[in-house]
Length: 311
Image (tube, rainbow, N blue to C red):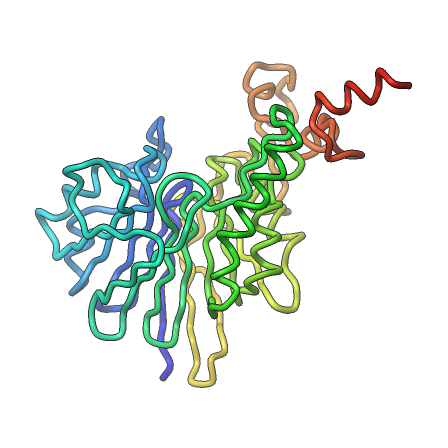
């Protein structure tokens, strides 16, 4: 049966997926500095348009759990689904990895592991399966970690991903974090290879729209189409035909400050000086590549230093 889903990106890892009756909200957050402006926020009044609203919180980190979501219960029919390690007193049905919860007829949620706090969520909504990773990622910190720590992080990540390789995923939301430097997309690329989602939307890049755009440009392949939704409040319409074909359109597109029509990103205009503290804090992708000490080696810095000493 054909159906239409509306997918909205709010900020960071916050998304909603909705039809005309049901809305699913994942890891909503307005930002540390109020990056999600009031006119783009999701409100309780808007939620009253839906018969059922399910709010998912993957873990307690502030960038995945905005306290405002609990005020929505006062105006709409909202149910909360949270990780089992959330603080005592948190509203919601708790889920640990391996748990499956029937939310309503034709809608189930299964919790999977994370490589950070909490869980990731696989939602089966009729024939449509979507996955929100939360903070599941290959969290490697090569500038700081020892070789053993890097190997342990990779082993933990592969172990968490393995059960998902047995699942069909139509749409995945997955982190690409610029703080990880040149290898910001290592976890997302592995997920694409191992799980083969039909569609992937990058997330968790804070306000670095260039990261999402670059990943979408380079990571799409014949099994997975990567779609960037870089603007706060971006809306994508997903039409699913009777034969399972996906048709994408964008009713609303918000262009982030500094994002050019060709998908490139700059923090300053050409007439402004580049040598500012802001630019130092927000390096471009080109800078990330040039400054990454691991372009020619994946060894940690301490190991590289010891190798240099030998020569």
